[in-house]
Length: 228
Image 1 (tube, helix red, strand yellow):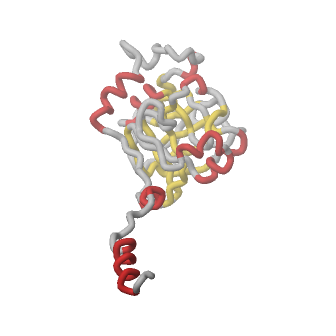
Image 2 (tube, helix red, strand yellow):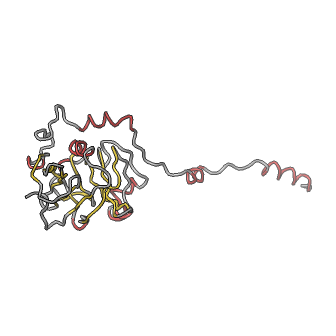
Image 3 (cartoon, one colour):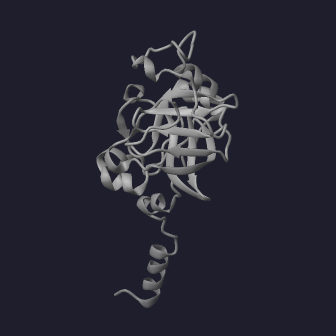
């Protein structure tokens, strides 16, 4: 017969040692990993996406139409130096310069009704930025974006590419970007989920010329802008 003393001793043996949390519970309690951009690799990344003997006006290993290569053009009168203008019709981005000219670059814009014309402020800049798809992107194309819901590290395969200019409405991040793209052959088309894409080597050249706080004008798809 089991005595009360036997039961207490047995119970102590069975239950006195704390039970470790199951593995699934430990995993669930871990904070999500945040994406990173390793600044020690930026120079090597830049070299990887910049053609040898690079000349912005002539280098074209991407097979772009020549009109999408960077070139200096005359700007329309009255435009503010430093500002950025995106002509969604011709697929050009213009950066207005002090002497009344502009540097013109080819771009890709958003697909369908995802393009959002408007007047924005460049509120932030980043080299080899990290990227996280928006909830709307994940909902719209889960097969494509769900696996990146915790973000993607900066690097040549990151959708934001080599550089990003972050568009704000007031103090609110709109999640719209002007950025480099690992898909340079998309330049000239409607390809993105809302952002303005550039060739990675091209935006590397533009990046240091653009200051935070300047205005970015994204014009509607039926309107032509900055060049005479």
